[in-house]
Length: 252
Image 1: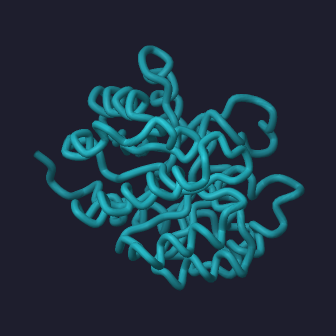
Image 2: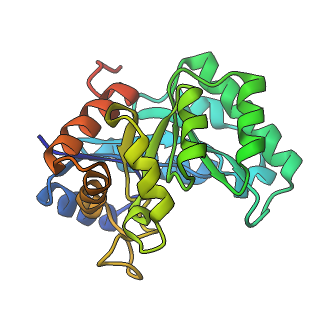
């Protein structure tokens, strides 16, 4: 058994190779590297094409919604692309107008429905509007709230819509009590683990660049919150991530 980092941003080129090799040495043998713009999605696809056990997503982050989604649909047909996103709403920074964020979010939900692809959601300070958009458009049958930052109540709302919760290094922070409570209440087969590298390095690496090799530390924190063994979290998140993204299905 091994770990899957279900959400990271592997840099292209030589740095990508170094991070993938380090991750494998740490027992992280599968990674999903995530696009946030059209160009960055192409870069993540290029990384995935040259590394066994690495897949990509293609999407437009709410920060970049102002640039539109022109060209995104074509990327979704590539065999290395396993999901739409990350897509959603971010009211913390408001780098794109909120109505534009919502429109681009809706359009990516439609793409996930049309292709029966998983949807990777980013939401920050926008829970009510995120749920409202999902309820209006219909939550895709495979949806994950990446880098989940809510508490028990928000987690319950996500789960009620059939979505998964993905926990990042924040669950190891002293301030992560609400996250630990949410993990405790989340069924083991409804959660995933991620690094969101290069951001949010877990304790004791906080303040340094994050990388996929550190996802076992996130898994250990989830296990502590759920009062179960690390091996149980490792096995469950491996199976759930593989099924969610269809990683063991044949591809063209």
